[in-house]
Image (cartoon, rainbow, N blue to C red):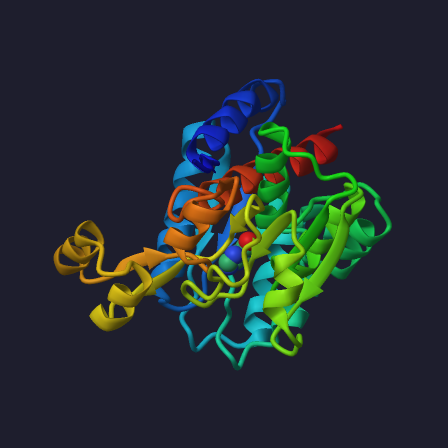
Length: 301
Ligand code: GUN
């Protein structure tokens, strides 16, 4: 039986450990969240981020400019937040509408207030093993591995997906922990063969149940970073092999949340895995809180 790596339990542990650090500060840490437009998934993420701040005693501000906002207007908002003393951490929720120059936006956030560690300076710090805020989702994955004492050093880690938000920083963090890392992507040849070599397989592609039994070596640790919604009954039936409970849930809810790995194959073949939902997802928010506290400690030191 595979071990289920419970992200909710680890999130609660991390948030519990964060409380005395918040209490020790003269001024509460401050997070500004910028959500452009009306993407329903992003709205849920942002609501959960604000709630997590509230529960921890972190001050938060939310800005929700309309989809029609210009890059220049967004840069002006970030400039104002860069200068605002009560704000330690600025998060611009991705994805941004196509007309926004997202790279200009990320570079406008002062590196000392960069919630996500996406600024090129902080990405450079990651490459150079320097200090800095680290991208929240891969940092959360490292916490899962560390807190479950899953060995990384000398292991073969395969990351599928090379996004700036997850895949690239994930590969670098595993490398820093002395894994032998392979970073696969949409142009990788013989992907299943690459994945079959993995002791630790990280799926960060953004396609429901893309990783299947042909990719998973028996006994591998599988980390599923994906959060996808499946509403097509034919697709759901194929993924869950007509499982009665899953199909009943689909009828009631209209859609199912599915990761990037097939949940049945992952449970059957892996030695340990993160479920979706309830695996990596809750940790992203916990790590955002930790980054915000860290940035505030640095600014108040
Ligand atoms: N969208 C999906 N994941 C993330 C994240 O970690 N940070 C930001 N800013 N946007 C996201």
